[in-house]
Length: 330
Image 1 (cartoon, one colour):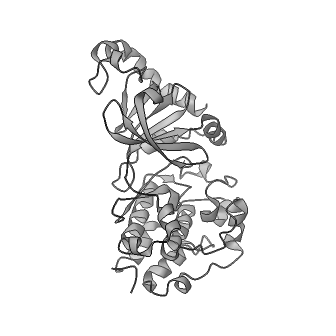
Image 2 (tube, rainbow, N blue to C red; image 1 turned 135 degrees about the vertical axis):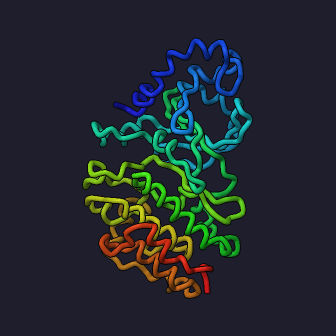
Image 3 (tube, rainbow, N blue to C red; image 1 turned 30 degrees about the vertical axis):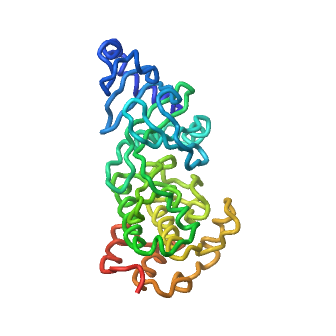
């Protein structure tokens, strides 16, 4: 079953209430005839909303484009129904279905279903999921008025990030740990998928496009997806995986946040970049940043250990390792 078909099946239960919605208005209290963007009523699910087909252009006033991924595009918009500024993620249905097809028969939840179930202060909230009138799966998310962590690292602005660096690292660990506690593997932990708060004091995790349940059928060898520069050796070598692939990616992300460099080369950014992750020793973090607290540097290096059996086993343990660290630098 394709992602669109899966979403349609979720919306099927709303048919019985459609006539009532046409006469009483939608969930926002607006008469149905004045809201052409929504063609079927709102259905509550997991604390968020599931929508039927929505005319995205009519419903949202696009303010500016933002991050674009391999399977989606994201922009900031004003919701004409509520007046709120939100993030809208439009997915490429063909690419998403191609990804989901590898899990055929496994009853994998869609990105929208997973995102609606994530309720944590360090994860950007998903308000609504559905399918556009152009058959594009979409998500409506909390808008955070800050840059991606990837941009912060790329700008190499030490003065801007220095005061919040340790808290950002803790936020990242706590957010991913929550995903793991919910029974999932994020599979694409990287700075692009963390949005900084406006004052750079912390971050929120976004994007569950590659997320899978942390159960045996989804951890078998062969699923080589993710961002190459942050990809664990298990994924690169098509070995069985578990939650520790996220810990490796988290470690590399923290390394980049501290050093503004990668532990391995960064000239190549495609799949070949990850081949060195278990064939070339990573450069010690303290060689780049001798001023880091050694306890923090050791914890980051262990989190990104190429040997999965020597890697930090959980992010709860990582947080305990840096519990007594009060500043990123000494």
